[in-house]
Image (cartoon, rainbow, N blue to C red; front, side, top):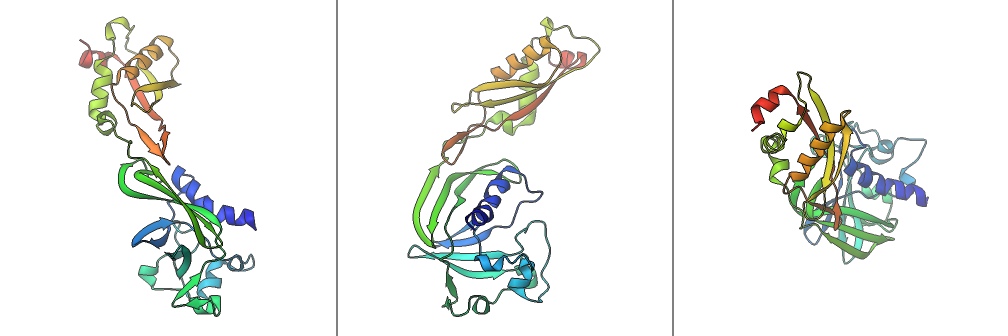
Length: 271
């Protein structure tokens, strides 16, 4: 039981951020101190009946939509009142389109008070992001000013951890592809390279430290040592690179850059 709860709670947190879902998943909504937060929590064990699909347990014979963005087959709403977590609604994945809502009174039989159910089955840590979005990395992950983690035990909010990511910043070179390309090719020492009609392609992977200094570089693909060495040298010259923090810790985001050594680029950028 503990393992199942761990999976249900953390599967979306981990995979949602790092891209192992084909589609970003629809989160639950949690009301706390007047703010609406995006989280992933879970329903009581009895709703996960292996003999029936979850939507039958929740919505009966009502026809709900199907979407790859809703692997759990529902979207729930929650609220924290006086440090107690309450379930306030269970909706179909397309509630705003099909207007389908589960009947809490039928599902919880006498446990509904003022339209809410005391969520005393929830024992977990749940993660969400808040504040200003600093950087959009891809469909699965963004960097916000703050990351937050709530610790629940039997529905009671025991602890809140807030992580500061405000030291994150974006480089003008990562944000402007033309500027990055111009910097790299203009700083190649073309006169010391044996350039021929054959194009040499070197793919470099790199990341920066907390100060924005690129200090981790590797050749992702490249067969010529001379050109590999020059590619690394030029990448090191970039004066300032992205700095990201996630859950308060420096977060290295590898960047992959192809560099083409050719007669054409030598004529265009060579001094």
